[in-house]
Image (tube, rainbow, N blue to C red; front, side, top):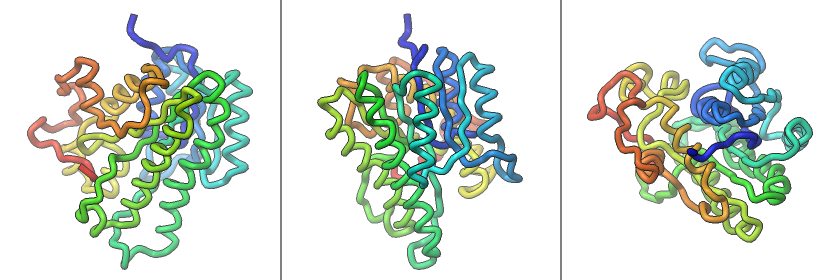
Length: 274
């Protein structure tokens, strides 16, 4: 039998749409429990889905869902959400740090409040959510998976948008630190990043619209890579910044044509930090 997440409990920040929802739905098809903590409680003009519609999709896919409206920047809100998830499902096996904010403005043009927003959601949110989940993960040796990139200090990633780069690398550094800190407890902590652009609301609204969407893969490629990581032994799989296509290649899957959004393989655009 293929490895499964059946009866595993995932606590995910964000996840109302895009990559986070795709990861949740892939786990739900195994029969996993998924607690999603997100801010989007009501539909928004340019953003498809809410925490409640995501929960309905998870249950329709075969999983059990818990929708929690909350803010990853709020320590008390996160602690309460994690407690709700543990009470509902008995434990937490997997923590997915998916919530993220993006602004690609140059540092000298970025308003301080936007800098603070990215640092508080991306870095502080990863810290707060991981720390709240850690006691549960240590009980049985669980996984932390953070949607953040490999660290590359090439100036081309710092010059154009230093603040965003700092926030995403901060997510990766926290996760790699957790891998070492929690190694003896048998907890695996890894990062996952897509090789190419992924067809999400961020790409549609901020990174080029339909032209960029046509050069993207679907979120399901990241979801399948996440599933592969999360079904590995956490004691053996830790401390790595993975790329989605490399994970799938390790699983024997090299034909990725099913993940194309609308375009062709030769037209795909690399994601940031690659």
